[in-house]
Image 1 (tube, rainbow, N blue to C red):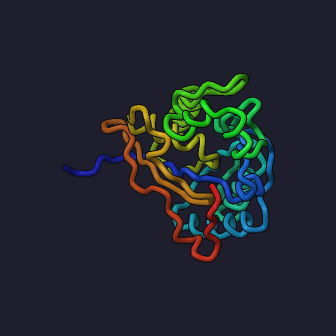
Image 2: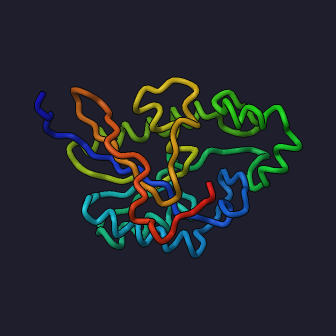
Length: 215
């Protein structure tokens, strides 16, 4: 079957490394900046994206994402826009706390996080279903407005996974079936006849010298 014309290309990017990654914290909307490794990762990422020529970059408002996005726009010449719809998952009283502490204090909820986080409900926090709905609504709006173009979204692991799940129609459990490293990029294509298609997941070739073991 011949390729359809007018496809839109979406580059999905996880921000570079921050100290919250290294320290094993639930980061949520705590505003960690990039650390030294994260800045090197973002610079390498920006270089890798030159060939894809994004016209726009849409970023979460948190500084680890905006710093990553700014490096991309400076290198590619794309326009930058901050969008709340791609903000990280709000984690209530888990935010900025060590995962080891959460495991001890909330053993039942910790078990859900490890094996079925889609069912997890934290007081004052979003659910993954909430994130899935609002991130995809933002993606779909951009795809409709930028049909046939290439653009990038810089956001967080807990946004990218549910966003990809919704775009691809993945049912629960989906969270631990998708992996995205810091400063990695993935590519979705969309056309009106077929919808979304994942053509690349978790590209990290540009990070050969800056691989992070932290999630």
